[in-house]
Image (cartoon, rainbow, N blue to C red; front, side, top):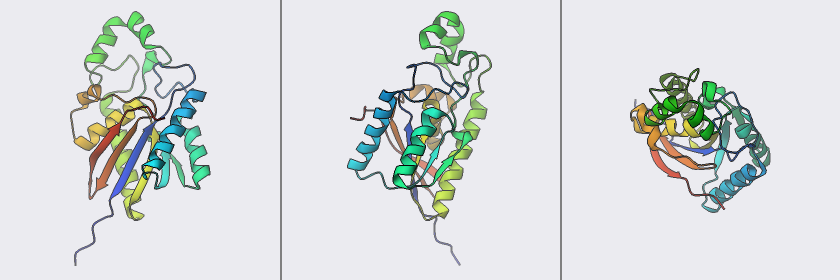
Length: 212
């Protein structure tokens, strides 16, 4: 007897908005909350999803870091949705670069910075998280939550995460080389949509336009 195919799942991933302190290297050690502008960016993205009829989420999954978690808690309470805080979707660790601005890194670590920009998968910052290990935990987390939602009958799942986490999710869906992450741009409050069908993911689209 054949078994019915698992229900498809839409995975919407929204990057956090601007944190307090502006742009800098924040991995999994710097835990700044969202700035007022960051909150406004997230609210605008959610409103944009609602206007497009794409806010039919069944549950929310979030990184434990404040710039993701606090908005996820707010939205889950507002919508009455289940919330899972998953440490496996936290950002990649940036080692000695944590908390530094891009300009500070360029000045203090010029060679390492150029190597990282040319191939972030092969040249992590000193003390930073190796890309293969980071990819593994992101891929496992994405598949786990997709399969769990499929077992619940499919539908849509909202994940609130980070820049490199989102780029890695794209690489995972496309089954592309890890070096491909450097070719993907993810702005504050950008929206990535994937579809989980059967036993693999597909890319639906990436919206990097500022929500307003």
